[in-house]
Amino acid sequence: MTHLLDAENLVIDYVLADRRVRALDGASLTLADGETLALVGESGSGKSTLGSAAGRLLPSSAEHRSGDISVAGESLFGLSPARIRQVRRERLGFVFQDPIGALDPTMRIGRQVLLAQGRRADRATIARHLERVRLRDPDRIMRAFPHQLSGGMAQRVAIAMAMAARPRLLVADEPTAALDSQVRQDVLDTVFALAAEAGTGILLLTHDLSSVSRRCGRMAVMYGGRVVEDGPAADVMNAPRHPYTAALARSVPGNAPRGARLEAIPGRPPVLSAGSAGCAFEARCGFAIERCRTERPEATRVDGRTVLCHRAAELARDRALSQRGVTT
Ligand SMILES: Nc1ncnc2c1ncn2[C@@H]1O[C@H](COP(=O)(O)OP(=O)(O)OP(=O)(O)O)[C@@H](O)[C@H]1O
Image 1 (spheres, protein in one colour):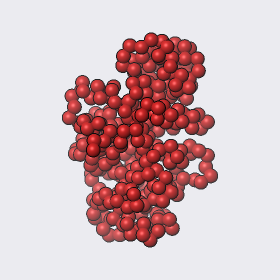
Image 2 (spheres, protein in one colour):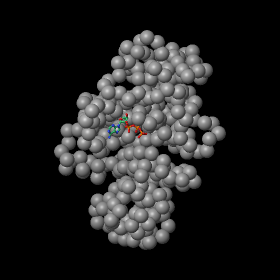
Image 3 (cartoon, helix red, strand yellow):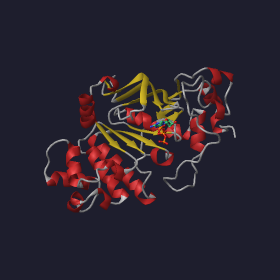
Image 4 (cartoon, protein in one colour):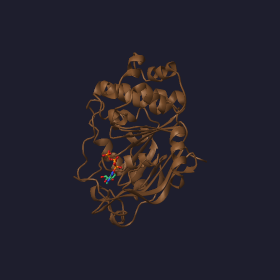
């Protein structure tokens, strides 16, 4: 079956003057048409690198070492610059954390939305795009420059632009992180409603577990540049099968306001300079055994999801993950 998005064993490094950072260490992820998937994990786990790779939007310091990523069956790394621009224009939409920075400061909003649509459109069509993201007084907004908008309004414009060409896949990288807590839920609701209407799949990159499990059908958890658990969102969140997911789920403060960032898990995530010899979570995991240090876990199916843990099946049988998880 051809997936809308298919990352297979993707390895990507950032090559800096004095060192090399392995951002993706064999990341695999698929997304079907119209599917909504939350990609979660602590800062530095590789979410943005994987999201950017989905549009080959990586900075020039990024080096593709091995593995592949394709959109609708087309492998992105082999494409000419002209073809990759066409794939982005016709199939992909992107929304990033900083809405004002994503807009051209010198151009009126109306013109930017027109360009994002990729073909000629009259004022009424542009106004409709803005109304669909619940912006009032679209005529005024079309005449405005980005600095005249609030962060929430600018993010709605960025969403209107990303969705104007009805992409097959929307990659949203922390789209609400820079917004006030009152508008976060509204903006997320708008994104999901528009995507559902257009049949657009969503890859939502976020730290905020609490807001995604009820919106996304699937949840994938990243750690050390790999997707370590991937399955139905409610199952992954409520009955994790990877020790890292269990620790992550527990670090969501039960009574914290919606949109609160995750509390840190004891210890630090690794910054890899080469492929991990064993499981990247081993140093922080309360269930680690010798094998975890020396042997990379491969994907196994446990309780309807994919898990990268040597002990996943055994821990699931023992219900161990609901009792304890990380070392402190
Ligand atoms: N442009 C870059 N140059 C060098 N290293 C980078 C660059 N971008 C990311 N990295 C490193 O690559 C690793 C993965 O980072 P990435 O931004 O993909 O993770 P993330 O999960 O999206 O984190 P965050 O939520 O903080 O954005 C980290 O160790 C990060 O420091």
